[in-house]
Length: 397
Image (cartoon, rainbow, N blue to C red; front, side):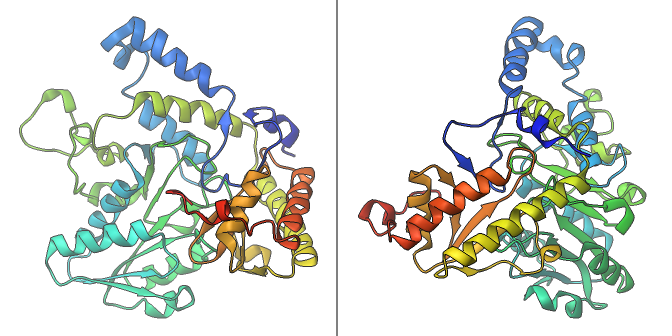
């Protein structure tokens, strides 16, 4: 069994704060500052450019990719770190479309994170080949998959509601229709058990600053099914994806393995912080994380519904149908969330009326959940949210 008391000690948690926003930005791992200092002072400072070899900077995206692979059910050597999630969405979809040249439809759903849809729309417009981005309701995805579909592009866990797609079933449905399956794991990596290899997903991408606690701006990852790597031509042909970057050939030759999905020079300090953060997962069983997150989420839902009848559950009622977050809808949700944050309970808000709360067993327990509910009940029951300062919209909600 995973020792969550031990994992909790690996994070810096500000005094007096109940942090329920790890689904948006994970907290600071205690070893992150020491790792960043070591990279800056001992590696960059003392080794200078030699650190690319002597400190293993060049191999770091693959090495850290293997650490992420363990948490998403992927084999070693199938995940690489680097760039942003938007870039990785572009890479995965561009590769998939090239592998299905006679098809013109990409299926996604209205619960997908907007940037994924933006990147897809921009790519399809740039191609100018008559492709269509077909966006349907989440429940209609399976029926939208037919022989015209080149790829499905879905976020496994809905960023607003926590609703979770059945990855295995939809991937199987896509393959039966001759389509490829691209999965965004931004809200599921480190939150729910994932079996990319077992369900034969073709591509997967995700960010590392949420449940993986890699810090603001932490780089994204990309996975390609091993037997497809040789067919996945990188649309963004960066020099570090070249088969021999330091041969400085004028012609691009992609690397033979997952390294072909590298693009530019990796942010070494940020990747090093991520590598340190992933040490918190040593000895952690994702089945234990899932069991514990459901217990905490169920406790929260039960208590909030009993004490705050003004709030309406916006997440699936069935625990197995949602990820590791719970959303409640409230007409004055933004102001209520600001009032909560002012009292030390940090969640976040998504328009138009959704209050989001993330449950991360690595550093949360029942005591924090109950404290959050106590304060939420005070805010809602006493209309403490109805103050001018709580209605002023900040740049980040």
